[in-house]
Structures are given as C-alpha cells and as structure tokens.
Amino acid sequence: MAAVYAFLYIFLFLIVVSYVENFRKFNRIIFPLEKEVKKYIHLYFPFYRKLSFRKKLSFEKKVKLFLNSFEYRVREGMEMTPEVKAVLGGAAIRMTFYLPDECFDYYNVIVLFPEPYHSRVTGHYHKGEVNPGARAIVLSWSSIKQGLDPHDDGLNVLIHEYAHALYFEHKLMNEEYEVFNEEAFRRFMEQAEIELEKLRTGEPHFLRKYASTNKEEFFAVATESFFERSAAFKKELPELYGTLVLLLRQDPLH
Image (cartoon, rainbow, N blue to C red; front, side, top):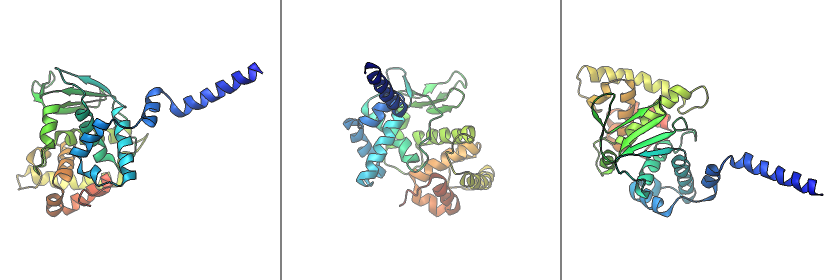
C-alpha cells in the first residue's frame, strides 16, 4: 500500500511540475499584480483604463509575466519601486497587448540607471539602448519619465527602446516564433525605404530627422509617433500608419 501512495505522490508531483515548471511561473499564475503597481498603471496608461474588466485582468497578467521574466540590474542608487515596475511593464504590454505572448522572451536583463549613463563603447551619454548580444535592455529612468509627460512631441524613450527590442527579436527569432506578421513587416520595410529617401534628401517630413539613420531607427521613431501622436501621424502618413496598425494589430485612435 505504501508503494501505491508513493507512486501517487510522485505522479501528482510530476503533474504539478510539468504544469507550473518552476516557482516563478507558479507565482505568475496564482498571485495578482501588486496593488501599488496597478495604481500606477491606472495613472499612466489611458489604454488600460478604457479596457473591459476581463481585458484589464488580461493586461495585468501580461504585465506580471513581463516583469517576472527579467533579471534587473539597478545602478547608481536606482530602485525598483512600484512606479518603475508599472511603467516598465505597462509600456511593454501597451505596445504588445495584441501581439503573441512570446514578445520580449529573447531578452533576459533590464539594466536601469537613474540618469543618462556614460557608454564605454561609444564614449557618449545614452538615454537607453538595446544590446541583442547580451540579451539586455538598458534604460535611464529620468529619460523614461520625460516621455510620460502629457505632450504630443513623439518622444518616448521607453517606446523607442522597446520598439528596437521587438525589431531585433523579430529578426533573430523568426524561425522559432513570430513577433510580427511577416507580410505586414515586409510592407512596412518597403514603405520605410520610400520615407527614408525623403528624409535623407532633406524634404520636410512628419518624422524627426533621427529616423533617417537606418531602418532600425526609422522603425523605432515611427513607433513612438504611432502611440504618441496618432491622429497627426494618420493624417500626414496614412499608408505608413495603416501598415503599423496591421503590424501591431491595433489602432491607438480606436
């Protein structure tokens, strides 16, 4: 009889392990998002406030999954407060709410500085960057906070760097999982070529000059404006805007 009980215990244990995988995933499933984090999500993300009750729960679950997926390396006195967690997770899910759950799975580390930081590689101060080789996203909190101010200048460091992260992830992981629909991504790249040519000739353009650096920067700058000044974007560049709607599977104006 003891052998039967032992077998049952082992069997049940294996079922639990196979479903949960590890304590971190168990924590994601069982416990809700912290109240303080939810408070700041409600404050900073109008998109969340407009969701139905069921979709709010989905948004919160996705935020928690995102936050629990990283190792955080804080620098120079930076702290992982509920506000920081809400902004990092909320922005990521605001961008990817309708995209596959695998988004950002490629990355393991988020490095946080309180202010723009000095890069040993470039010798300059940076507000943020994505390092695909190290699977890391590096950010400065003061720069992120500037992007949270209610204005429509199309500048948002967090959206910009997350857009870079998704762009590289799509390129690197497209044989394992899909970040963007490949046809929509192809269409965007074709339109990017046209707009890049206009930017590089000095023709007045809706997107800021930095978008002309390369396709990666064009995508990041365009994504900033897509979320930050949607109505003006749609009016000035309706075809490009429509392609981003297909690519990100959402329209911020609706």
